[in-house]
Image (cartoon, rainbow, N blue to C red; front, side, top):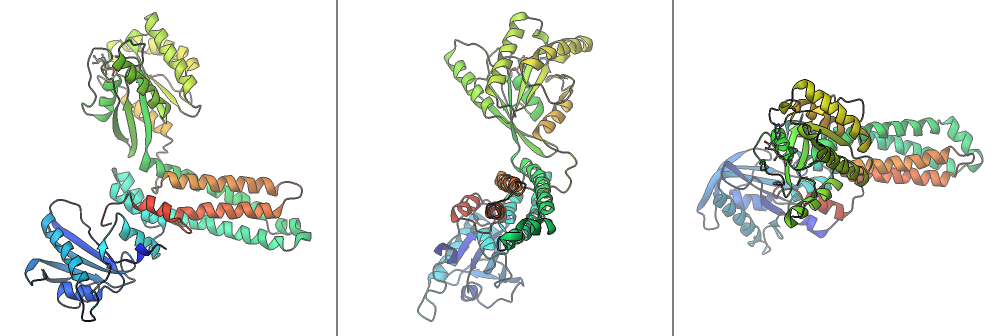
Length: 488
Ligand code: GDP
């Protein structure tokens, strides 16, 4: 463990700005002398005391509540002091400075009262809670996710992860894995009867069961990661197809510039919209066409870069112009380029806009006709979906589009009990799955090499442990906790 994990730390725990209450929090080992100096008396554990907070010269800075949580019954697992004062930035700064000053003044022993007290780094209180086994790493991440949650669904899921729902699933997997490992490693010591032994102990069945459970946990974890991270959807199409109008209609605000002059969205505009709590980062791009205008050409090049990095592409057509041979031909070319440039797993959702400008019959006929042309030219939406015909202007058809977007994002509406997760967790589970696949293949050859099998199971367990943070590197901890706010 790094030396810095031993320093006592202090920070303002509440958000910057003014509020009714603001909190300064201290955490460290043996902070009782500091508590007494700051509060003028020893405090009863976990009881609120109303008292003046005094500066070194005895003048009151403020008065408020002080709470003392001796180790290990505190957020960090160390001694913690919380000073709840009035929530003004100057008051809190003064209180913070007072804590530092008091800690560094001499005690009767001639040594500083609380040597080494320093300002906390982002996430350092939570990092201590993790290092002192108050919570595991997935729970620590859930705390940040709860604070950052931008939808009710994300907040509820983060809260579930925080209470350990996700960690318990990981622990159950680990227990099953450990059981199987013990079996295989015990067998290694009795090479003559190894296969018989494994068969009798149903190692085959246990491994199959384990793989099925990993799959199920992975599915739920993907949903959790989707809730937290969302997907990136790029709207592509010719100038004037209505891309900006569609983004505005989805976002419900005037964001991108909508004008009847082709080529006005020269750079990208991103908006995060929420559909049933799932964040979708929708990007409106410059209209794709041949252009001699240098600025527009840069915009178009950027549009293709965005498309290449998309999780899904929404290809917008102007229904009122599909009968024009040049226009339809330009769309076909875009479709061909999309097909060529996009990886096979990136879905392209074709959308027919401006239905309001045609009669319903005409809109249906035009879109059906065009859809048959385009389903071969670009990846058609999975399943037998009717062409998505809509009007960005009136909003007709937007609900179906939202449902389609959720479908291609991989969201399952019945995902009740979802816990929040991160891409990191999904990747770890993928590694577990890969090791178990190799183990499975190993077990099913005529004379399995049990040492290789044991090694794969060990690696699988290692990947699993990374989720909850057993054996984590300081680098990974740095990455995770530095994204927290200060004072958390
Ligand atoms: P972009 O260049 O693809 O971003 O297209 P815009 O969103 O700027 O729209 C181009 C023109 O088409 C504007 O005059 C819009 O008002 C018009 N437009 C966009 N969507 C619709 C629609 O659903 N119906 C009709 N009638 N016009 C639309």
